[in-house]
Structure formats: structure tokens, C-alpha cells
Amino acid sequence: MQDLVAAIGTVGFPIALVVMMVWFVNTKAWPVITDAVREYQAFEKARNERETKNNERLIGAFEQNTKVLSETMQMIQALSSRVERVENTQRRIIRTMKHRREGSNGD
Image (spheres, rainbow, N blue to C red):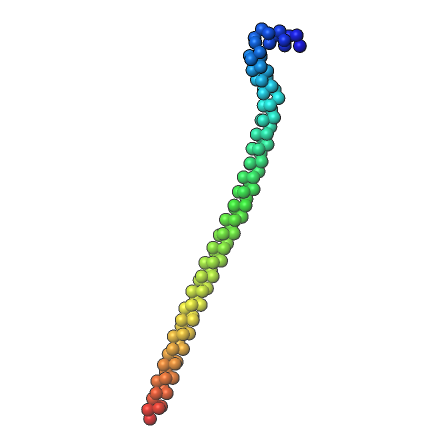
């Protein structure tokens, strides 16, 4: 303790205070900060890995949905062309029936 008082008396209180603060930061605070930074970095790495896996699953789901939507659109187009053919056939039948009815009424 006398050495500490002698050192402070020799170099002055402000310089001794700075030296003690540097010593405290280097020996006590810095390891705690370093550990906290390492823990945060490990947490961030784990979170990034989880997000990457989630993103890959989401991309897979989007790709699957896109495929299903494309197949659905193809089926709708096929049905639409079939409905159009049926409608055309029905129109032809109706015209033929009208034409026959008009022809039989004219006799």
C-alpha cells in the first residue's frame, strides 16, 4: 500500500488514476467484453444458420407453389378450350334446330 501511495505521490494523482484505469480495463473489463462479443458472435452465427435453413425451406415452398400454380393454369387452359368447343357445338346444334324449325314452319 505504501508503494501505491509513493507512486501516486511521485507521478501525480491524474496519471496514477489513468494507469489504474488502464490496468482495470485490461485485466477486468476487457476479458468480460471479449467474452460478451464472442457470445454475441456465436449467437449471430447460429441465428444466421437458422435463417438460412428457413430461407431454403421457404424457397423450396415457393418453387413447389409455382410448379403447382403452373400445372393448375395448364389445366384451366385445357378446360377452357374444352368448354369453348362444347359451347361452339351447342351453338351449332341450336342454329341447326332453329333452321330445321323454321324450315318445318314454312311448309
